Image (cartoon, rainbow, N blue to C red):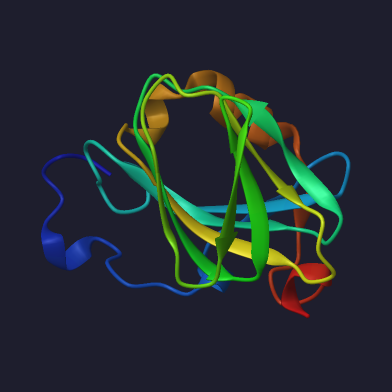
Length: 146
């Protein structure tokens, strides 16, 4: 969308089924990137939903931007700079820029977070390209929906 697009023309509220969902090559993570500069004109942040399958983990990552999670459902362990911290439904998690982190879900249930990062999605060319390689999956079915 161009900067000239009016607020009335932008998507401001949507369902998870309105955005493509992709699954990691190992099948342990699903991601739906929903709020971006392309989808709604967000100039300086991006956000979406992630599901981590039971007995799975998300790869370790370090970002040059701040990240926040809201735990929608389940329990998992955040491992930040080798320090484990338990997360559960209703928790808010703050990850400062430059902090090495990953999520480990050793539990029986799926772990789901809403994530937000303090950067424009189109500026994350490597991440956009990587997720573009992941297979798209049906948002309405699969292990994340159980």
